[in-house]
Image (cartoon, rainbow, N blue to C red; front, side, top):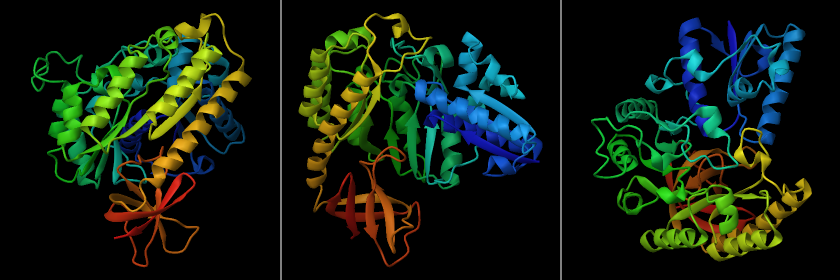
Amino acid sequence: MKCCFITLGCDKNTVDSEKIFKLFIDKYKCEIVLNPEDADIVILNTCAFIKDAKKESIDYINYLVSLKKKNKIKKILVTGCLVSENNKTGEYSELFKDVDVSLKLSEYVSNLDNVNDRVSDILSFSSFLKICDGCNKYCSYCIIPYLRGNLKSNTIENLLKETKKLAKNGTKELNIVGQDVLAYGMDLKHSKSLDLDKEKPIVTLINEISKIDGIEWIRLLYCYPEEIDDSVITLIKNNDKVLPYIDIPIQHASDKILKLMNRKTTKAELKNLIKRLRDNIPNICIRTTLIVGFPGETEDDFNELAEFVKEMKFDKIGVFTYSREKLSKSYNFPNQLDEKVKVTRRKKILEIQKKIVKELNKDKIGYVYNAIVEGRLTTTKNSYLVRPYFNARDIDDKVIVKSKEMLMSGTFVNVEITKVNGYDLVGKII
């Protein structure tokens, strides 16, 4: 039996898929194929976070159904967040009628947290470790708590077992993911491995993970700003394996909009946090995400955000237009904005950020950084793509280097930055 596995959406979905696929392969002894048209069974893990993600999931299901009607595949299994949303709203029942099985993750395996074996992706030297799922924040624009539930942390014991297996299989860079990474463990009140009165559970976990041989880089992603305290800053500053890179989704800078979003920080608190991070960790790379076009966002609110971006000079920014989701609290908010306004505002922020990145990249010229080799650049002879600490896999740009000697993926090299090429940097091996 030939099986094709397709994962849409976030890194957390990737981890779920890798675990499900391993279970499926072990149970049915199937052969993995990359092309759905070559498969007997296709398993699709969907995303439903925002409108564009839902469209991609729906289009994929329709594509697979068309293949099935042409007898090119036999069975379609669909899981993930679109299934969860349909279970809540019934909105996609017609879409699922030609799907053989639509299942929640929890229906396929009683507890994915206890599954340590995974089918690794192509970048086996760089892996994601999902330490928790769900969220207790209930931001007004977000439907994740309704799709994935409240915060549910995996145990330290399970996560250490999983990390040891990843390290044994060649993982050197561990990307820590979860909907709310720094809230990890707050629901594990009875865990013997955690002392909630001593330090944040995430600090205990990362310090334990850093003791595992083979793991050389640890990267923290999806860190809510209100959860960043002195213990987290100290962790990044003093633990040599924890990269000075942090992903902090702030979403906005107008106190009015932050309150409407049900965010837990103010603009003043965000400014203070960024200053503390940079004062304590001078080489820190700060990535953030923003939402423009939220209901009630006036021109003044947007301009306040734009000025904030200019002042803070974030290293990396992802900008989303507000997506109106039926399960979210903001769905019925008044003063919904026109899509054209949202797109225009997004372009303006990206233009501001483009100038900032250009200046920040110029400042890197002449400096030498330790970098991990991702692979060969097929379009240019003897060229390779490498990532220093300030570039996360899949979401950030890379550094292009030339080397007559073959560079193996997953190895570390020292790279001197020599010039800027748009968003990319060009360097040479030292």
